[in-house]
Amino acid sequence: MRETPDPSSAVLGEIVPSYEAGAIRLLFIDSDGQSFHTSRFRRFDSATTRILELTSAPETAANLPGIYRAELRDSADKPVGWFRVRILPFEGMPRSYAAEIPKDLNGAIAAAAIELVDSDIDRIVAASEAASSRS
Image (tube, rainbow, N blue to C red; front, side, top):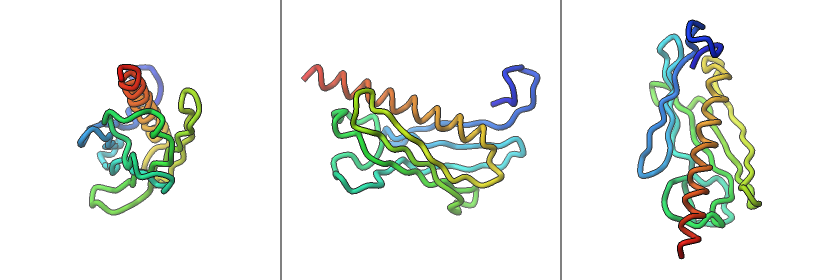
């Protein structure tokens, strides 16, 4: 990720998504080489026990709404913050996001991470809806 769209602008850092059992995890590497990583996004509310993590598992979209949280840890695996997404049970599954990040992690990188997670949720919703329509 760069400071501006210009390819010669300063590099702010990098976000590397990975998947563990279908659940997104994020690795952040800032311009100084410092790294942070997230846990999986786990269900934070107790409204249901059907979906415990945001994954690409073939669940119905109706079970997806809830609050999910991923812990943010530094390179020594010490908790330093979190990311949270609230998925509402309305058409299009609208979402709201919140995060607590250390000052060492650039806010623009955190915003880009939220965009990545949002895209992943779009993919999960589309796959769930497609699976529901086939049954």
